[in-house]
Image 1 (cartoon, rainbow, N blue to C red):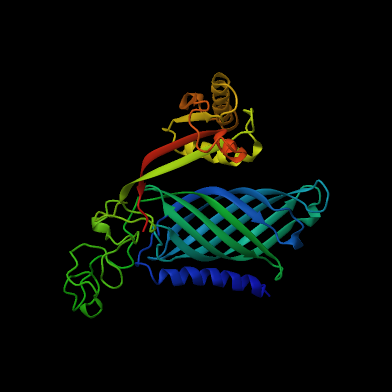
Image 2 (cartoon, rainbow, N blue to C red; image 1 turned 90 degrees about the vertical axis):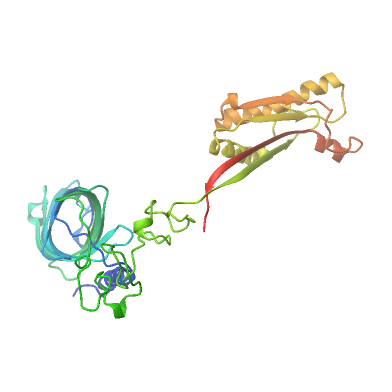
Length: 380
């Protein structure tokens, strides 16, 4: 028998897709296409084969509005999992049926079932060749990236002659759709029905949005679609596919607002020293990250000392301290030297008293501040 755990897992994945679809507009895209891509094939341990990656080609041909027939071919090489140098050639042929669910934010999910043949030929041990009839369960998704091109991927659980053996395969690739982009509606647009005043295909007794303009695509409640769920219907949305986390204006476009971003850096030094202590590596790294994020910013690093020593000596020491931090930003964090200026103020700008050890320690420092105005998208 097929492992109950495998069937349960696939049924759960399918139920999630189906339940999500009940909440979406009734749209789908079932177009004839041919595809090519890569496939990862994962063998059941009973087959004594190593998992590997190969090539896949295939195609789909619509049978009804939602149903299509599908063909797939996989080919790959795999090592025999016995410690020897033997290799196997795998060919997998499949024909199946795909059922297209409702689209979710432009993505087209589908579920399928298929029959196939799995051929495994070993180069050193022909007696161990396998030729299995198979059946499989598939879940996939595809999305148009232009009128004729799609990206697609799917997952298949593959069952063979051995009822307890279960392989699986994951494929991704590109597909060419014949006929270009087509409106994907689950029913003829604006089909006239009895008691449908606005001719949107939804009877008046179920129409939550009466007087919908002619030709407007509507959901099962008769209300115009809002595909990106930003609160602005598609016919007025000038910025489709806006993330739901962003606030939008009346045209459905993100609202921009100005904000100020500011970062400060303060590094203290030991008496008569200009070397940067390791305890400040994190603060300097974060300061460098800010400069990298806002690449149009420059910074002035100000160096200071306490009052001990001559004015001339302290002036030079304050400059060396500022230059030491600049060198950290340039050499350790790849910030352009042209974006950094330094200046030394000696003992002339204390922030604390020079009459105590603690006060003098606070005055032995560099300071740097960057402030930048930015334009950001407002979040909901």
